[in-house]
Amino acid sequence: MADILIKNGTVIAIDPDRRIIADGAVAIEGDRIVAVGPTDIVARNHPAREVIDARGMAIMPGLVDSHAHAGHGLIKTLGGGRSDLWYRACQGAYTVGSTPEFWHAEAQLAALERLRFGVTTGVSLLGGGDSVMRTDEAVYGDAHMEGVLGIGTRSVVAVGTTRPPHPLTYARWKGSERTDYPVSFEQQFATCEELTGRWHDSHEGRLHVAMLTPTLHQENLDAPGADDAVSQSRAVKTFAEERGLVFMQDGHTKGSVRIADEIGILGPRTLLSHATGLDDDEIAICARTDTRIVHNPSAIASILARCPVPELLQAGVLVAMGSDATAPDRSADMFRHMQQCMHYHRTHFHDPSWMPPGKVLEMCTIDGARALGLDHEIGSLEPGKKADIILVDLRRPHLYPANMPEFRVTYFANGNDVHTVLVGGRVLLRDRNPVHVDQDAVLDAAQRETERMIERLDLHDLVRTPPMFWGHARDTDLIE
View 1 (cartoon, rainbow, N blue to C red):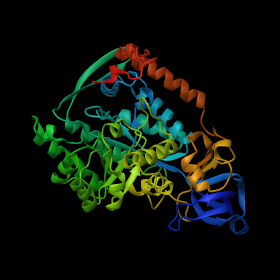
View 2 (view 1 turned 30 degrees about the horizontal axis):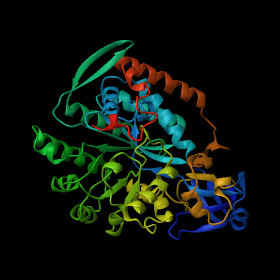
View 3 (view 1 turned 90 degrees about the vertical axis):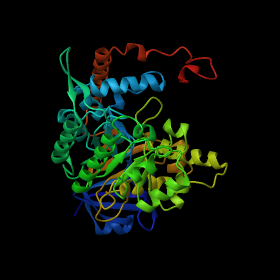
View 4 (view 1 turned 45 degrees about the horizontal axis):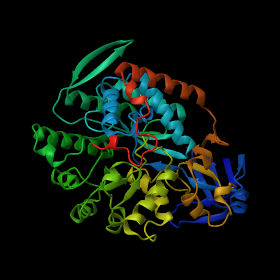
């Protein structure tokens, strides 16, 4: 007997045959899918202890967000959209202004946002940018992992080292007392090893660790410490290969892929985020090395330069999609990013034939799973895979009439249309409400830790409405 039978819905399986079953069902035993097919057949062969009626809903694999940042959830909107002020907040918070309680509260908030939007697996970099990875001690990563576990979603947490020169200044807090201390590359590396040993592929595969180093640009190779930067990147990449971890770099653009190839850190377990401004040679490098790309269509980086996704796909490069969330202008709603992706590339070519909705849906499901090395477990609805499943309520005005559901979930749906979410066969969201989580407690903790961080770093000027918010066609304060 099955544990759960989801029936009477429209199954969008993203399986090898890309089946869409108008009156379909999925049977689950334990944490695995055991059958996918027409309701009458699956229900007859798999009577279940619990039946979920998905009438009027799409039954889909959980979405995969292949690039986001831990910590950003408590910093979003700070600085009113100015990048220099935003990075000031990030760098301060992630090195000298945060506590384990900050990382736990942010992890819970971000994971809860993902859950409510149907994102069952997400990447979270433990910080972001240069010199802002919180890997001085393992206690911060531990707090993040424990926070995600409390929500129940899957997470790939990228930890890593920061750009030389070292040592870098970090700080601990005891009440209102701050103690600064220097942190070396070796200390950060040891923290990453410790977190990998404790958390990678743990808790029934819900937590994974990935490794990360700063992306190197030509100005970094021309600066003092360039040899250290290259040798450290190679050391982190080697460790990732030895431990079977995905190796990531954030912020690739205009020549950095060529540098990464020259120093020997590309390959099928390498995942490069943004990848904007690539030329034909760099596209060919990605194809030759089977390096994977994460496209973040809603990110500021994609405004400053274009990620050539269609050209990468036509060259045979695997491209997944990320939210780059949360930040001043974007959330973890992957439906929003799918729609942004389509418009982004169609606008570039002045041609609506580019990036069909089925391709962008693949980028947020099976292609994301493949980029993370998890496609044997998640990313599609197939017998034997983990039961990570979302139900999208199609019986809503913006999703009617009910024909062509595979188009409607990509063109018109949003994260708030997600009705039910299962991760590993466990129902975590039902009727849009979290089942095992006190949402108010998560929100209150997030507010409390944000206010404490702002107080520690005296960032009160960053939470004021900027002078050009109203009545102007352009906010010239954003121009650096």
